[in-house]
Length: 485
Image 1 (spheres, helix red, strand yellow):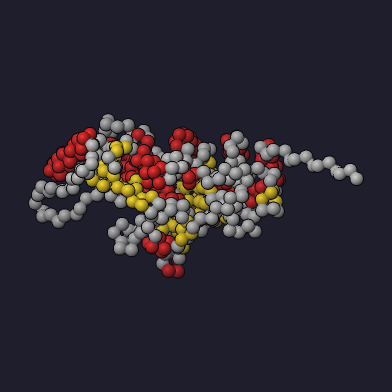
Image 2: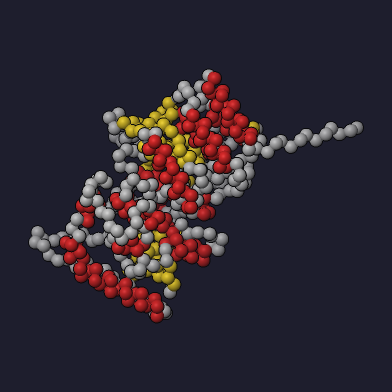
């Protein structure tokens, strides 16, 4: 919750915080006028008694900063704390994260800004209509501008006093239950028209995204979240070295390549590994693909919980995530930067990084291998005069670590992915030609083969991949009979 800093003497002096009351519109209905009156009464009471509340609940701040194993941890029964999905606007109002008020909520969409009032009930008032949730309000706004919109991705789209609601919510959930996958979940918190970029069975959609340098972001307002941002680089000679080294096993790269080549749409997954704080080295050891469609809000939570259990069983930590840009560059979008920053904020014990794979980058059609990049985000200081509202994506250098054997988990994950994608409409048809020079099957095998040793295990994996992919490809068309002269 935002608060103004006021100089005070050492003597305890009651402070009255002034919060603007909600001004009713002249055309407002009787029902909505009643809601506004309740909101104004609530604001007045909070302003007068804020100092008393702090004394009565003096342990609140300490409780939030206690270790998760502390017996003093807040276990208020007013709301369930099992998932971030159970957190509502009313929850955040009760906890003091939000305060009701006039025009404290806003949506920036296609160059326009829309402001709404937050009521004491947690509902949103805009143009004499009440909305039960950020999603319903965002969807209404976006459909009004673009009737083809199916959803508004509300928590990510709506801001409270300039700060995104999803960040405020995830910060609160993280303090109260840090063990959960919270915040901008890579698999679930995606807008409809971002998740389903193509529905073709082969890549013919040359989706060229706008690319900006980080310094240019200050000149752009209401920037499209799909805008890509060029990396900034660490420079040891300039006194800005990479803060940790990154070691990536070949099985991780093999699994990412395999997953990203299966579909024309974006895919996402998590990276498991370990961190050595003495050597300051992050080891990426295993890949955990999300077997759900990007933006699948119904199934993403279950898949992520399954991945969390698998990480725990293997004694690994969640050290990052990966996703694909099927036909674009291996550069992060503004949304990717937000997701990565949230992951870093929820992972305090060790670094966590983002990985991007571009299997069919249309900017360079001569490239047969996938383009990779690893990144980390530095967020600008909130009070810096030159700060922009986006984190700075920093390119990470990494070292590949060859493995001599093929782990059974790798083969099993490949089978499970094929089972998931074989009935999906965006599955690649592997016997079709890519770029007119090789089939999609040949391309994925080429990308993977270059990461393998040339011993028998490498040949066996290639045969395994070949058999898997041909099992879901339609048989080639029969040859036309020769013409009779």
